[in-house]
Length: 167
Ligand code: S3P
Image (tube, rainbow, N blue to C red; front, side):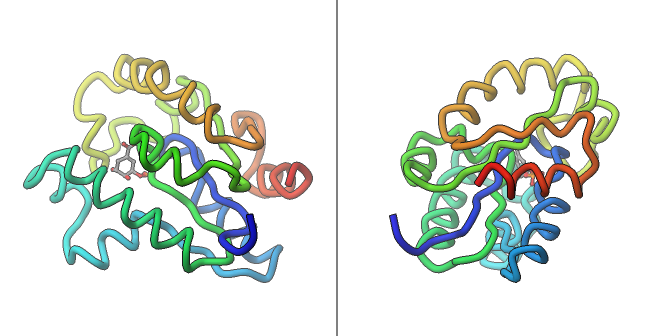
């Protein structure tokens, strides 16, 4: 496939997609883009408000459209929201793309993100919710990934380096 992002980052919230994405962009001399930010800009409201006002299904449809637009227009580094892989249409858009999955274990997730006030899916009992979320999503991240990079024992710089090595 020609054109499109040099690398697409997927992985759970808190796995470091935006930090690693910015480092990768710097290393590649490329521009960083993030579909969460695209959605907020297009909608003129926060993602948590979209969830509350219109529900997750509506958000996933907005997200699918944002991913399609970014894949068509953007040639740098692209990070997707943590739940983008839940949507089969979004997963189909990622086929044949250079996709790096930043994996993170449950304890690291609880430590790094915890309750995450701005993150609507983690309102109560973060450890149990993280376990359920990871169990439901792990195979979907793996399905779209062309490379998996574990983030638990690595600094963002080391994760970026591992992504570059694997591309
Ligand atoms: C979500 C992750 C968020 C954002 C939304 C839903 C999820 O993105 O898209 O709150 O379902 O895991 P980040 O992974 O960038 O925090």
